[in-house]
Length: 365
Image 1 (cartoon, rainbow, N blue to C red):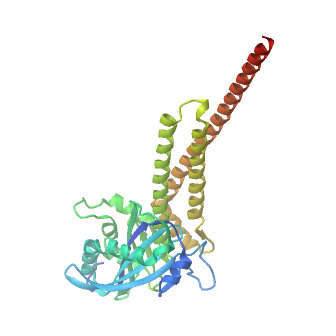
Image 2 (image 1 turned 180 degrees about the horizontal axis):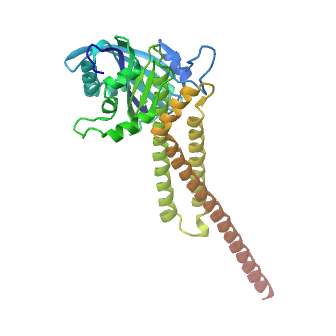
Image 3 (image 1 turned 90 degrees about the vertical axis):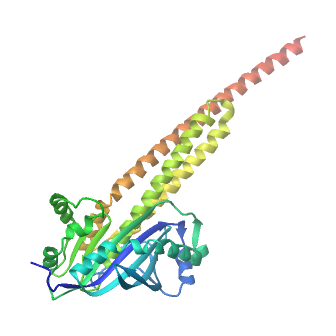
């Protein structure tokens, strides 16, 4: 099937996610902004597809104009605040009745014109939120994602027709200057393809997705954003535990040499290790428990597939392994403290015995 006459309407959603603080007080955020809503994901009217421990807060920001591929487009700006310290900036470029050629050209060229706008929006948002951000600390890590969101195909065609018309694999995988993806790679990509009905379609890749959703529901893009937020936080904390383990190892090797006189050093280091283990265990549990799949099998498939594609479980495993290492270091230090205290006690007993003998000899003289 060719693409003659096929026109698409929808939008392109460009996400940048940043770790900016230890945590965010969402109640304070609500007090500081005028237009917000708590996120929910409910495909069926009377069911809860997912349950949020503390639903992220979605904020409406400004709209501005941008020239992309020679055409002027409005850019709607949104932000999302997650209680575990992540801010997401979302640029939405809506379009209507674009030809397939114009849509693919827009998709290829949409990122570069907006690169400088993301950090500017982020700085403004951080300033506006102020003390709602606890322990403000910008991480060097960030995540980016793009969703090509189509609400209407005109003339009316099915997502299957769209897949035969549009080279989905090339759209999601091809980067300028790289070799086009092979047929085998494209076929592997389509294993991350999902449909609930004949009228919708989701195709996932590592950093992009196509969503065809005639209902206009934003649940799938929201799920993909949430999975990226989890990935970002796990990357941040994996790096944090790496740095802590390096500091601990350095202190063990250079500052805490075997000596009964350095019990205080052992105790300080053991306390630091324990704080590291406690903080990171609490954070990873908070991230893992932040969203629970309940009733919706279809959404669960999309969400768990995104987590698999983003290697979220591998990052969790990496952090758990490093926390285990830190826990073993703590146990080692506790044993060392116990041994040094025993040695010190024995030394004191010997000194007391010597003093007693000396005093006895002096008395005899």
